[in-house]
Length: 230
Image 1 (cartoon, helix red, strand yellow):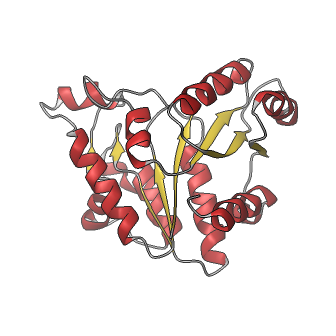
Image 2 (cartoon, helix red, strand yellow; image 1 turned 60 degrees about the vertical axis):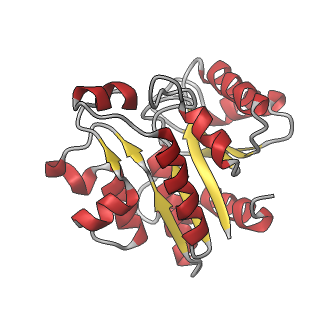
């Protein structure tokens, strides 16, 4: 069984897009795959289909029923803020130990491949003491780091890599996800690769129909499944 944690250098960088493409590619290759996004903020039941959990379920070929949403994303908050703040606005909190236990149970129960999508960037707070980095450290599974394509992304990405390395987390792949920036994604990818210590750096352009067949998803799947959790 293979598991990977998808994180990013910031918010709205493209974690869900990368997860969806990888899920659809793996399913197209008849691989058994599941995905969870345990913590989500900015969640509105009236927009469940276009929410991150709804989009992940669609990629998995499942309907966004209340049971399925709860299975994929048990910690859901309305305010589009960091999880700790969004939870406080509802007089709730994220129990870090429960979050880790839920994630480990999902890893153990996964049929073949499990993708765990984080929330926000590497250092987003989950409560008063823990960040997404602590969550990843507790799970100790390989990481896919999604970076944006904009001026400043090189520094943001290398900073994230340094933080992840300090926790001995294995970054399997860096994906530079294209956006409406002035810099060509290949240029940012080459610059990042020079400092990435041999970590694979891929680029992902804006894609449309059948985007899961793009070579980046092919390579992501190959890298993920060929090495397992080693």
